[in-house]
Image (cartoon, rainbow, N blue to C red; front, top):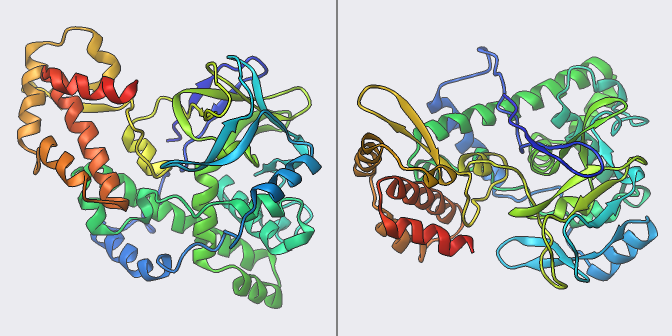
Length: 398
């Protein structure tokens, strides 16, 4: 089911959506985990070739000129952020609840309208919101200089390394079979969306038009665009109902639990609103919502440095289950819960100390897997009463 995080902005209600919906997969399309692994390995050589929804060059000055030309009002600038790629920095001191960025409604790419007046307009029926946005993004890219979004598309990063793009041996390093299973479902959902798109194209386009469509958009083109829109789109209530949007510049805001929120004003512009005071030159972030590290990896392709909302499942001898997060540790825990957490730690292939040592040597997906494992094990150690686990969490949080 779609997992949503509700925000309470001053201007209007807004909801942040994850990068992918945990889908309902048809039995005919779903296969075994071994089949998912084989399919993933077959696609890996194509994926290693690099993303296609990305321009070769990008200039800060040219992008600033583009934002000025199109009326994007802002108190932020696009900049490189250590460890996060591009992000937003404040150009002056900002107060809490201050609008740091306002993107005009004309620049929003909506899943409801992005294919209007295009060759693919009649294909929308039967396509998911993510497929419509992915196809719309690829269509805008194909328009080149004729697209008002040219500079935005040119600065888009590579698709995020969400778990559905990982190799099988990388997924094993998570040490979580449940999360591997959820990854397989999203993997098949993405490919099912591609099959539905092809079916829609065959239904609507003529023979020559369909041949041209297949020549212009490959399966990997679609999956790259699909993963991009799923990790960047926001969900808003509008006069047309629920819509998902790609919002240029706004979608550069990185996550922080102390970050701001977003809203749509009465004119349909999307605003990024600060959550705390931000000094000039500091990063302006967005709170992606109270998600677990599992959800961040599945839908966004990263693990937060410290995540108060991360949680673990502890199974007690009587069969009952307890889902415990860092936020729950302010209250005393029953002895049975502490002992169950300690017992679960003993079943894991590596200790947190071993993982911390390995993290100094690894990068890429291996490092992400280690960060994920360390976060879970430190939480279990904190539940078990280990003070050093609390210290690890608090030092990283502040």
